[in-house]
Image (cartoon, each protein chain N blue to C red):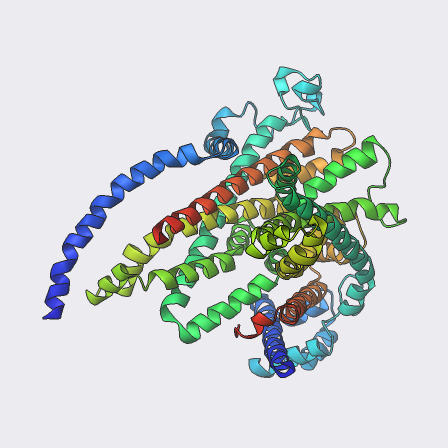
Length: 310
Length: 311
């Protein structure tokens, strides 16, 4: 009898929730841009610029990044009295720095995004498993999370590279392990809260499968937290990619990422400092933009949660 | 009260031991999954006689569980195999480089604490003023400039342009300056941001308002009321910073050719000198686990409330 009344009561409630959501989303989209600080807007433009460059690098690069021109070696950038033919100068083999920079942004963005997707998915999956299965599985995952959190990731990454050797696939995999423990911890916490919410309990009384509950209810509700975590992860993966490639343990020539360019330019600090400094500035600016964006997202999540509580 | 503290420490100690055991196991599985351990530990140019003797010593004819126990026992005895490059015991090679790394890390830690705490305290005292903005901007930039790039910029300015400081080696104290600043930069940025947040929270709490109404001078409020309350979280962050110091010194030692463990680590990876790599990884892991243990225990000594919750 009570079962019937619950079923009778639920559909209208569900309808009203569905009706309320889209309008809320529209208003928060507009508000979102208005709330953002100038620095956050600039960061978004920079990040969008990097993504666009990554997509169309082949089309907009003025030269082949590997083309050697021994007649135009070590030319300075335009601001230091160079010519427009090589706007950002050339390196000691006469390769155009601007073209190399564009191609390096492409590799860095591709590798960092792939790494972030892997690590977020892994962390989310483990976080959900720990939250849902509990007891021994939870203990086990938490123990691994604690161990990984105690160990500087750089050492783990270097060990994996030392043992398995260098390859781009392994490198992306290593980057994909970075930060999984942070995602797992945060997602586990979020899922533990969400799975006790009324709408999840309602779904469970309908005999919805665990997978369906997580796909349709828990995941969407945890998404803002996951996205904020992803931006932080992306910042750190960009920096780690740069560091490992700089040390010669990441992307291998003839491919080149921003870290590689800095590592290569290190040998020409005395004669042509721009070869190392320009890509270094791009890494720092990208990391800064991502950090500002992740701070903004985090603050927004917090205020959104406060609004719900009130 | 003492017994609670004792029990707490005991549990933490047990967990730390478990963490180290888990780490050693992971390294074992990793190394065993890649290839023949005899080749890994003796190197490619070992004679057949040596191989057979070493295989027997490692007990490779025995079941995998016994092999694992033998491996763990070896590590407990500090035997990580022989370095193929230096032809000496791997642990000895690591210890030869330990001094330089500790010097660098201690100097950077001191610098980071002075700069980070100082900047954080000033920013929290003058919130929303110019100094605060400056600290926030500089620390954000400090977090985002990767150590290897900062190292090159410092080298470019102070060594190549101004010719004040050497670019590499460890001949005199002046070669320590640039590496130490580079490692300290990111860590002090973390500390400054954190100190500012925590101290601002403490300064806003009701007991601070009460202290201010009692006309207590502001320096006294800071030293006797706000700082002790902010000390606990700052202590935790200091513990976490040791990880940042380890990572930072790996990169910075390589850039400045500082003869420490980080430099040895990178060159050993390049040479595939697995015994040395393994020794460094396990030692670094053990140091990190022990640091966390010390921080956890100190945390409880400082804050009695933490004893009640069992984590």
